[in-house]
Amino acid sequence: MKKFAIGLILLLLFALVVIYFLWPEESPVEQPKTIEPTTARITSEGEYVGFMDANGARAWLGIPFAAPPVGELRWTAPVPPERHTGIREALTYGDACVQLPNQTLRPTLTAQGGVVGSEDCLYLNIWSPPNTIDAPVMFWIHGGGNSIGEAGTYNASNLAAKHKLVVVTINYRLGFFGWFNHPDVLAVSEQSSGNFSTLDIVRALEWVRENIRRFGGNPENVTVFGESAGGFNTLAMMVSPKAQGLFHRAIVQSGGFQAIDPALGYAYQSEGGHSNSAREIVNRLLLRDKSASTTEEASELQEGMPPQELANYLKRKTAAEIYSTVAGEGIGMFDFPGMYGDDVVLPSANIEDVLAERANYNNVPVILGTNRDEPTLFMMLSDKYVDRFLGVFPSLKDENDYLRVVHYGAAAWKVRGVHQLAKSMVAGGHKDVYSYRFDWDEETSVFFFDLSKGLGAAHAMEIPFVFGDFANLGFLSGYFPNDAAQFDLSDRMMSYWAEFAYSGQPGQGRDGNEVPWTPYGDQDLTTIVLDTNTDASIRMVNDDVTYESIREELLADKSFNSKDLHCETYVTTLRGTSVFSQEDFKTIGCEHIDPAEVSWY
Image 1: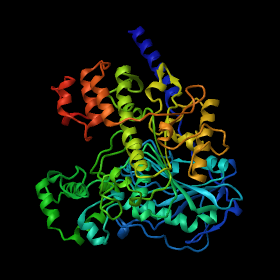
Image 2 (image 1 turned 180 degrees about the vertical axis):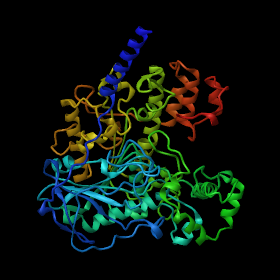
Image 3 (image 1 turned 45 degrees about the vertical axis):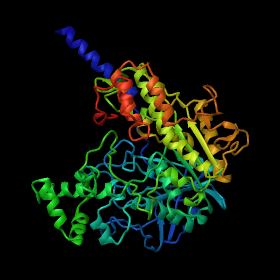
Image 4 (image 1 turned 90 degrees about the vertical axis):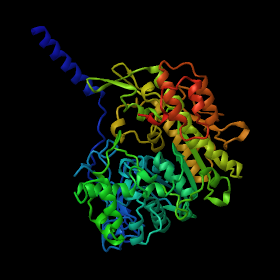
């Protein structure tokens, strides 16, 4: 018994030591800012004063670009903020928009009633180099599945100061507050679209057009860029008639786009709607209120309510009550219908068809890119692929199969996020289309777990390289070696991004010394690979891939150790595409699996 007790104590001590070294550092707590009098600026709504941030950049945080979308303004298009008198201090980020608790947020934000953030969240932040006039503007849209995230986790001082850019970051309404398509609510609010978040981004661009010159920026040279959901929203700006003329270049990082049928957003699930459609949410609220005891009763009650009564009912509900109807997956994201193809804000046509005609969209110069190992950030959270000793320390269940799933998932993301879009634009005569693949995979190892394989060039890993900021990484802090090769790649990527903002062509970067980044398809090369000189370096390649080529590779693949995982990977990679085939299931011996039951997680 004594030996057992000593062994248990040693095991616990070992666990504590491992946790200390393995657990990522928290982002730094926000420090008080000191007003810099020379930053006083008069905007269309009033005067603001900011502060001096790192690297000599001037910064203004938490400037409203729209009135708070609360009360009667909930689920309406954004309107300009009211004017104010006096000088307001722009020293702290505005609240994040309402979302479920997650690890991507600033550590100073805490949950209340099961949610984080506020509905009063439509704020932007600006960084500007000193003594600058008519600098290119870079307008950042954060990611997070359109259900989590905030502008406050990004610091653009280095990017702004290093390349004399004005950088703007914004919040936009998330989840049910950003996309809600109940016909009774829309009828009462006289809004013809449930794409409220898309309109938030348009409104922020309008604010930039009206005011950015006062901060040293050129309103006639605005680059919209975003990652993941931010990339989707960047493409939404490219295809939305509401954004016409408001920006002049676009960078889509790990994005993609396809508007959905508005009916998915309002129909009951039994009638073909989404499981989290507006009517399904109302039913759950009525059941929680005990206004109905069955789903059938809730539907009957909902359909019998006059539009104004139902709209008032929904607008009286708190954000926490509305979010109590869903459960977050992974890091707080959840599935909901959004980006409605209503032919008012967003087109209903297939995205490739829209991009095939230059007159159909805002055909500005564009960069499209993905990361080599996109799925790993999500797969690392899944017990399907990862074991955790003591519930903490990860190890891959089967390294070979894990990497095969990553390979196919990343290839499919590359098809929908780069090649399909680029081919449509180039075929339609758009000549300023560029593509990248981010390959950096030099993370640290922690207690025998090789993060270069577990994460590698994961989703979102390119963001700190683009911003030149490795100090504000939240749960990813501690995973970077912070060595010379890492910082050199960051400098080179910032140089490409900045040159694109200046000229519409990434070329050879701002200093003219980088590897030439040529347009998509030029000399049969499609993509620049971004990697360190200590690994495979920066180079142009042809990495064209199609769903058909992925299908053929999957059918011929004999390397999976698990037949079931081979079958499931076929489904999760190709489901919903034109090449998905039940006959293929027989070819690879998957008759025992129902594709409808396969989950990616």
